[in-house]
Image (cartoon, rainbow, N blue to C red; front, top):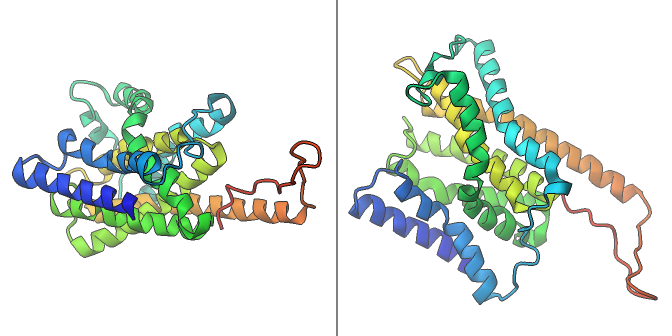
Length: 292
């Protein structure tokens, strides 16, 4: 409760001050950064001063050598999902392949160099998105439903979605129908959280999830929004988000299936017992990382 009180109360209070009092745009980084860092701040406060549990299970170690395949997936995955989204849009006839809107990514810079720079910048932005992942995925998710992955992921994504909702009323998300937009946003965040939780559990570090979160915002949704929502004949925010969510949902479903298969394989084996010292207690091999 302390975590949610600090996260939601602090973020929403700041949004009111920044937008309602100071008049900052919802797209202004000065409004976004303090609010989006609040989950991480709340997790630090609770771990250090409320529960005093410390940070041993926080996944703070980068684990670059062991987790590099997951870093690579987190970095390149959003670009691949953007490509799949555009292929789907073309197949459905709602987008006629035209990459010229990408020329607006960086004024005065051609589309391909701009895209390359964007991909190189994403890892540098990982610390910006660390605040959310350290709060939601590293702290809150394992503490819901006794850490059972599937229900805790669903609950975390719903709370995460509600935390975002005020942004829809101050110009961050330009939904033509707010209620429908919030519903699509919620589904999108649920699918994203499945992927983020899987990356966190499999890599053992919150930095992988933070990199993927940066890629989702700065590559996947930025590129599809630029290509599908651009111009008077664009799809609009809701349709663009819904279409972009389709491949993310497919990926989330595939990862859940892989996790369930892995869990069944582990359960089919005899329990592996590891003696902790002479005559020490035995423990079962960790099955964390199985969604479903």
